[in-house]
Image 1 (spheres, rainbow, N blue to C red):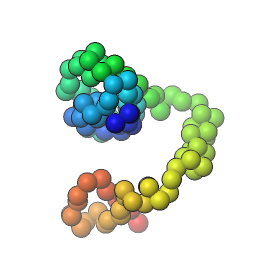
Image 2: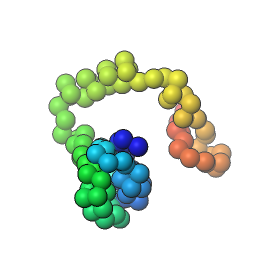
Image 3: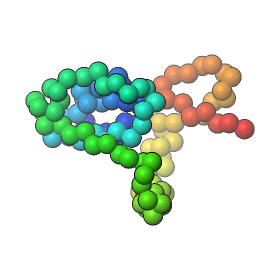
Length: 103
């Protein structure tokens, strides 16, 4: 893949980096999977991949609003619908990535 966005970190980020093609870029913006990064320098040296950190905590509110507006205008809702599903928290049948709807 040419690039990716990772919001989990740890092994998930290492896997995304391993699948990034030559010259690709990955943006990391989360820590849900942990602070570690179990990988080597191979993706960076052998394929020239780049890892960019996104500081979402200290971003000015104007930048955040711009980002949300871009998601509203640029995101293909059909593709988003095809890769998401909703479940109740108590159902216990999880496969892949799940959005848990509370309430």
